[in-house]
Length: 112
Length: 114
Image (cartoon, rainbow over all chains, first blue to last red; front, side, top):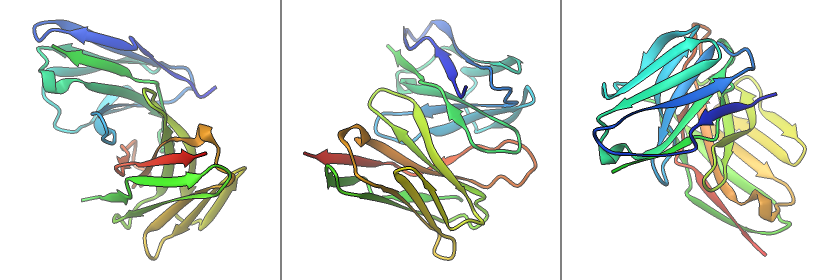
């Protein structure tokens, strides 16, 4: 089973809202990732968690707040987003020490 | 910094072979990957190659790596309409110290002509 699930599939939010994106995997992977993908662009790395600890933050604005409550779950908390934050948010997971990353289907976010 | 380059479009006839090319600059790249993305979907891992290999074959897919020229290619034999998608080349320079992110090329849009 190489499935990574993400909820919700679509999300529309206003600039004053607070929402959360969720990602789950049951492959026993101990590394999890958030990427942002704008239309017609490649994915860009946002955060990396390794053994449930934040190991990489690619200078992401604080209105994005990641959380890894356990080895199977990864959340991305959103607050006071801007319209330019509208994008596809992709979660991925891998073994630590094996960089083959498996991606979820993404959450398509629209900020109004 | 790391850079991965791909041509943006490739058009092939159904049944022909498709060859998608990629170049990268990071000489410490450890793994090189090919991902497929269909419209509105996430990324599907197609195949990957470790940097000490020069070829890998998996059914209709053949990956060739020229480490000297930092050139990677993906050949899809007998291209079908279901192969129409964007193909991303990606690299990581994992050195055994932990998890690292991937650096992606801009993606090649494969267009299949009937």
